[in-house]
Image (cartoon, rainbow, N blue to C red; front, side):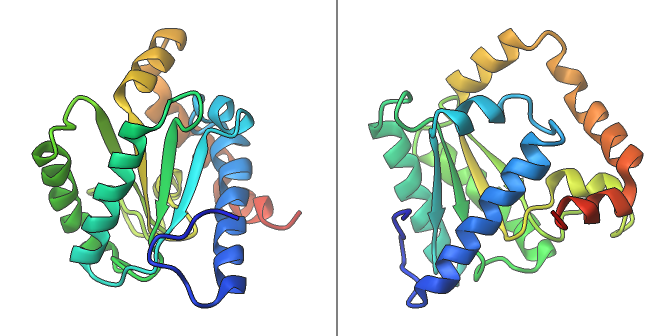
Length: 190
């Protein structure tokens, strides 16, 4: 059972949230190869699924700080990356989008700029200039609002091992356009 930060009182709900996030990671992120670096840390069990009951921006920022410090203090061989799942905070994508500036400022203020990177995932993710139902948005759509805390050193190693890392974004959009909305829905039927 993953450690809960601001714990859910409903353990069945927390189990379901973690299970849905793992399923998304397996079927979408790894299964569609949206992130060619994800499989290795997943197989080695170096991903932390940190679920928080935070409901406000301030509570979530405190949780982010705690998780960044945990990453700092833990050997990468044991814990390489964290998915901070926050289903009760920043549920509106526009609020979430603007909150990301606060997240980046926190990372800098803690002295972690260049040490950690924080990627954004959200069930309503929408790239600038796209329509809400554009299939390309689904490359960053997770089951719950989630912040992905990554070590810069791990990203550097992965990019060095992947010959054409800058093409990942374009390849992901091509993958999503190829499978379309029907293919996305089929991922969840099995």
